[in-house]
Image (cartoon, rainbow, N blue to C red; front, side, top):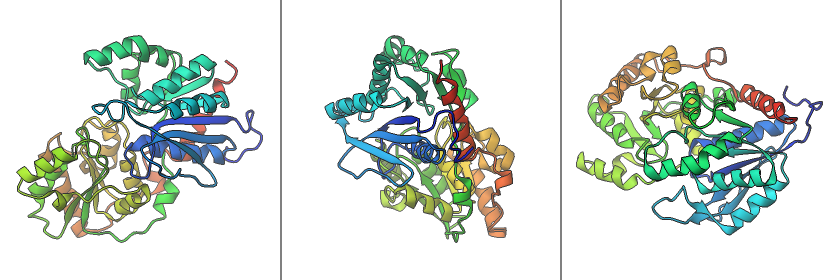
Length: 381
């Protein structure tokens, strides 16, 4: 399918809309997913671009296969920094870019930028697809319920397709819309990672945003529980502040350490890839993480992982190795899984080496082909 110049819809103009982009990784997985899809769609002969907000005048990320346009935005409400990111320039740009597009692919959450993009698509009668990344699920808070009843449900129901990551997310989204939901998992360019041959460093890492749902405090507690057993191994946290850095520092102080003992700041995506490939184990203690890109990247690079039982891909990870999933949602459960993996690594540094034929997740090419099928199935409707 790749590179086929005889497609029924050559040079289809596809615009992806993303709340926030930037090399700090502040918006997490959806930003990387958007870039991966953009590159893959261009390889398949489509005209694909990304429009996103940015917090300052950082340069757009671009190469010969993908094009990004970043528009400076700021939070309308300080109490809701990501949710209320917007600007008059963003509104004008959305209208102009959506009007010129054939298909609009919106990385959707209860946030001003994707909601505005969806409303503009409806007003301009443009076909749009919503990829929710686990960010839309039932919420009993009164303001969210009001927003869902009067806005979110209507926007979801009018979408050509809603793209869910897992069956769990599909079931939750079915409470908003019934007949237009399909599963599209995250993909990864396996060849890119599997060709790496990094020398391992005595390091266990947490690489994600620092916020409440990612639970970096649990990583700290697990590290403290076993660090005396593994004095030669460092336990390191990397990631941008997603609103939880102050809480993390307070927790670390209460445990008798300093923030700099664990936290080493944000990384660019390129730096994160290197860090993951070099580390002994990658830990993500998030609660109900849908489909974490950082875990896919770690596995593809040959680095064992630990996720929580509530992670939506935990059952798939158990099939590779049971120690890839913590025993329970506690720090002790994470520590137990780490003990197993670190003990194995002492005996055999290469005990986990992923191979393409045994990789349990979709490659980026297969995911992109499925997305193209979904797009084209809606062109004549």
